[in-house]
Image (cartoon, rainbow, N blue to C red; front, side, top):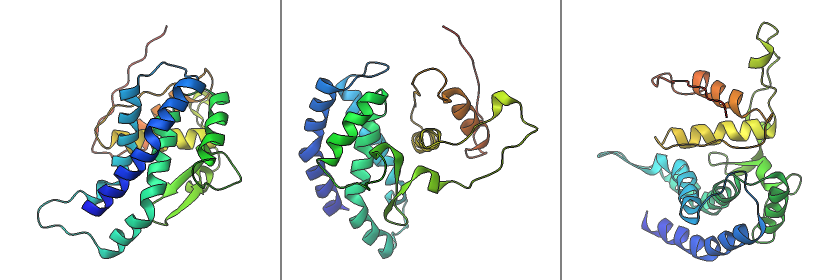
Length: 205
């Protein structure tokens, strides 16, 4: 795996300091962050994609997956920059970051960089809405428990699982009425490994 770590190091050296400076000078957040937390968040997102390459004694990696990793390294890094650095910024700042990221690397053209997920199995970018099965709304559910999937809620749901399954903490922030609470609740209660036991506590400010 050493050649791959060299590639990642090159990508970090190329972009991390520059994107952190752009973030500090141009973007606004719902909750203030500090620089070490931002690059730690980038690493957390990267780590989630590399879990299959962390082997126990006696395990081996299929050559097909090693070949896929070569193709996936840069897109994984770019996805991690988008969500690790830009996940906590407001909507106008996301538009700024979209323009900035496109000036550095190639992304699909139709939507913003926040509207895409990188599929490491298919080795391609996919829109968030293409990653889920479209289901009819259950009329028996209380209105407060209904989620109409949007690119934002699907993206948040993925990131929650992506980080939580590494046994790391996630803080979901954003303006009122964007579905944070119900997205977190649905993901933890019904969308995670049943071996875990979620606990719910509510507070008001």
